[in-house]
Length: 187
Length: 187
DNA sequence: GTCTATATCACGATAGAC
DNA sequence: GTCTATCGTGATATAGAC
Image 1 (spheres, rainbow over the protein chains, first blue to last red):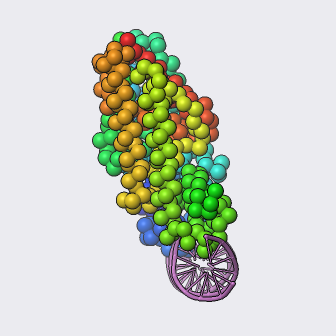
Image 2: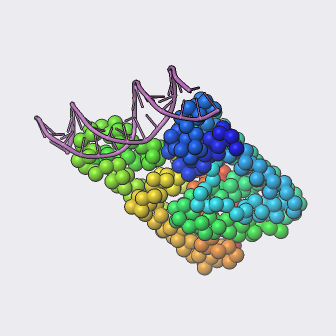
Image 3: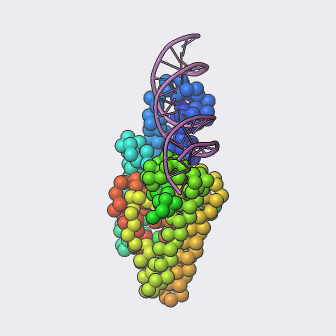
């Protein structure tokens, strides 16, 4: 792995752990093993490096979701697979956590990957919910778009509650609760 | 309002907007109109002041929830009222946002109010869900504890999605989705 | 209680040698 | 490409006058 790559990966980790405001160039240099000059050779500064890191995290998140939502099985099975995927609950979501970072949200360039990722995810999940309904797997009652937003919110909120409790099991409980509510609408 | 009070309120606002890491003593002094000496006269430092602010936000959040969950109406009506309450979606939850702050979570004193607030809220909501079930308002299917965690997660995650989209309507959609799923279990 | 002065360190970046 | 030196600013506090 070359230095540029190590800088991006170290920044990704630090943004995940400490957010944008809490991540200093110095910390990035120490984690990656790069010197001052090296970092500023590959990137114009902290925002430039953060953009590379955020874009990659967003792409990775979307790729995993798409793999599960367009994988094998019925629509309802794919939704269940996506929701039930094992996640590092106490670490939280590397993209979702950026929404709490005022400096990220204030910068249109840094903000765009975050916005697009969740916009895509809600739309994609709504489409699979609509598919489940069309196939007679789900009742006609709940609106697919609203249901999709609620389900994604359960995951994002599940991270918050798990961290608050310092207990990954709380995340699993949130997912269980969502699946339980969804089950009432299965045909 | 005396100076001590203004310091706490200013800190509450700043923690809400920028988090603990993003809030400096200087910013607190400027917003409150207090000088350096004044702030350090009333509080030992940033952590001490943050504790006062966090404890107050936690208490306020709990008070509002308790008012709705123990208010008038059937159990299901109270749950719906709690979930549907108007909230400043783009501002987010002043307590939930602290879970993303590594320095808050690393300090047991600062962490405790956050942990206790959500622990209490999940338990309290589960009790009202159990009440709704006992009263025949809700089907026996979903587990109250898991459902409660999922519902609180929808609110916390709704903030994340609304901020990601820069659109408060997304928060409302998440709540709508949750209410739609819950409706399927109403008797 | 509040003020100003001062101290120490970290942040985020630039300059220029190698 | 990477290194060290340096810079100006802000973070977080202490000291002591008033």
